[in-house]
Length: 491
Image (cartoon, rainbow, N blue to C red):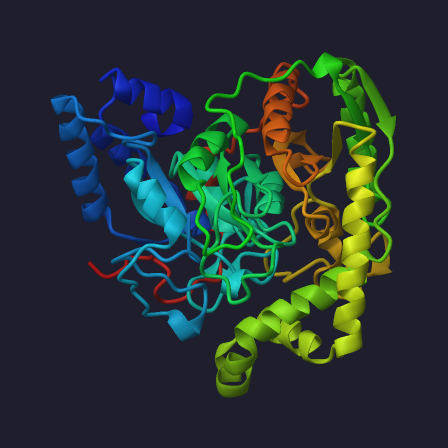
């Protein structure tokens, strides 16, 4: 891969600023890569190439005039199909919105445009982001860039795949139970789950729900950080929004000063034995970089019930009317989550809130003793996308379709911020990722640690970020696509 679309976002932006790379040249490179690869993986599902070309030309002309062009000027961006894009189809992966074309951008999308980002198109997601396997009845399944027959995870799966293949330089994501981190791990890219309110979410049905956050994805943490700088900012329509300090440039902290905890399973998550063993081996490869590394994790007692109940409350708020009036148009995961929520009693909800508060305080206390916590970013290796979710781990049947995601949803329930970075490949030759986790509000530290650790990992061929083979995209993968999956939106 040596085309302009394979440049890092930082390098591409610098080249554009020096007038060594034209925004139109970069965009055409990305569009060519989409043309060459998207038929195999179905990552980009709604596009308006002509509008993107017009925007890139405007930015190129502005640069020529010496105008202020913005942090992301000329960078092709993919937007997760849960976020509204003015004039470009936004389906939420649902038949209920299959023909929806918003007239206004979602807030963070508007900020990306204002910063000069060129919106190339929408990236695939499961219906309303429910599930860690990117498939829906509007566009079909999205395949993994390293093996299109396997899942890219979800719900930000399309974004992760588009990044891995160089279809875009940056992409937006969102994260509740790991929707940003798991796809990053499965596809060999990076993502950052900010603390609540860093990227304001003003369209949530329940504003007093801090667990679902918007965040950036890139091929590296430095790239993701660049997108975060454009997305973030105070908006009081999000009650958790407040001024948070994020460095304007990542320099990479001195890892040798840090005390780090590592855990293969956070003491609460089902993790495939081979993944746990691989994590321990990989820790052995990077532990020298830190002052002190000890095994340990916060006390996540009760986290599964807390997650199931509070997630259920959110789904009832968002989807009860849809379940009652349009059940046949909803996919299985939305129905399951909403029905589980409807079974909860007031006592269940009250207890979940009490236990979540205790959990939050225990995790804060844990981070008084260590700087960051590192663990796997996914509990299993990528599996066939025809399998909706992980049904068992190490021979133990999972009680819900979400349980295999405990390695990511446990930190969510403690309001942690977390970076997912690539750490080589696993026993099956598929991408393997790790999480760098910090407490609520320590976003700057987590970003700096993840950035510095990426440099350590990149220097070891066993932990360096894997790059997908473009020839995979020419193979017939028989993805279960729907008739309109080519993805051209109106206009």
